[in-house]
Image (cartoon, rainbow, N blue to C red; front, side, top):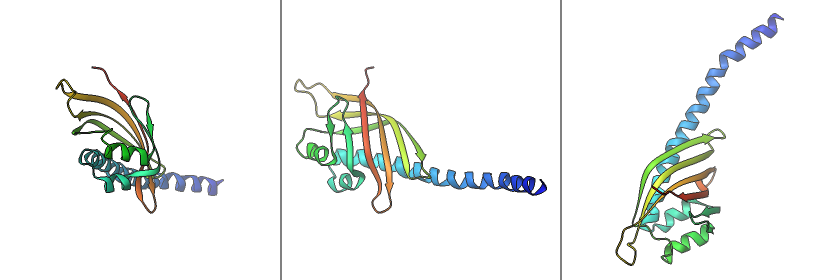
Length: 154
């Protein structure tokens, strides 16, 4: 019984150390993913295709606020073709949660996208709430594998 009690006490003493180690990995993942989210938005505006190719996973499912879905290839092509145009993307809110020992991240946030003006000259703004899932690939680094957004009405 004494051995079991001693083992239990030792286990309880090591739990905080294990929790701190996991927390540090998760904290590092949160910082990395937050920076990559901002980098991706900038790349979408600047049409930086090499960055987009790197940050989007090959199995990307990109669901636009109107319900239309793209793959990695079709979404990047839509930017090339001018179907998806971004003059500016402002981040209003960004929340990153890390899971799986810092190898998976779920992001939710709110952005305002400024697109080219409408034909009548009026500003073309879209306020979106979105969810992103990123997976850390051992060779490719962080990859966006899911984007889902919904337009917000003020």
